[in-house]
Length: 104
Figure 1 (cartoon, rainbow, N blue to C red):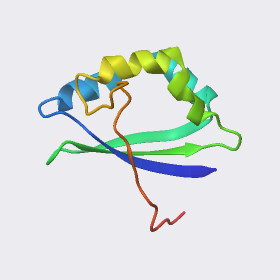
Figure 2: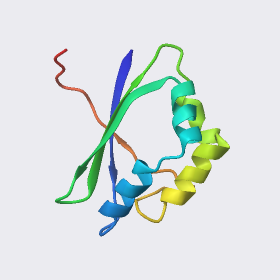
Figure 3: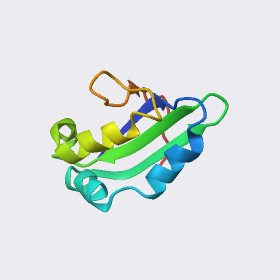
């Protein structure tokens, strides 16, 4: 099992909307993430500056890298582009984080 963490950024004033959209995450998107081998996925917000910290586990043989081409994921990215910093293709700007400590 691989742990992966990354940082993203909300646009100012969209904290409540971001939370609402994730509280109502599409069941078929949750299933696509699970089918790709992603588990224990959590996103934390730093309200001081709108930074988002995400951490997830990737199972052996996961297909997480293929999700960028999944039509449902692309639709979610388009849906979320209003509230967060995105790349030209509407994928979230993700900054990978390096693990420096872990205690099981």
